[in-house]
Length: 210
Image 1 (tube, rainbow, N blue to C red):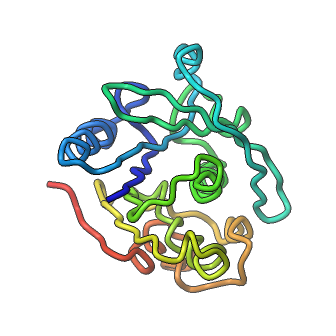
Image 2 (cartoon, rainbow, N blue to C red; image 1 turned 30 degrees about the vertical axis):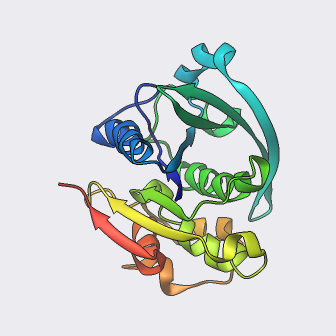
């Protein structure tokens, strides 16, 4: 089985909480069982010190509601696990991982970068393992833009793991323009765009951590 573990943080390169630890130890356990598991995560500012250890994989242009930006993909092997880093200086070259006014835009970019990146590194997983609100829009974007337009995406399943329900990725409705679709109540919760709700609505399966 092929799994792409999608996480907004991943130990030992970026960490604010337990998600980062899971982003290493669960893929390691799955790999030990014989599965092909890779991790994809943003290339944050502090990760730059590892740049000399990385291999450049390619680039993609991401379009979000009239905004175009280029992302670059780099790979680093750590403890026999492939880490793929999504680099965009504007969105991720910052001192902190979260807490910015444009977080919705940042992690929509990350979500598109994951889906577009499958073409770059030619890895079409059986499962996209998503984690928390930062990757919650991926099932919706996969359904709306990829699944029925490209056979390589058609059979991809999504698993959304909820680590902390308190953080849902709730934003003003103007951020919906980044999704490049007509308005859809899939991602609306109490009159706001809610990334986690979109994931709960559209993911193939949902689980929580204990």
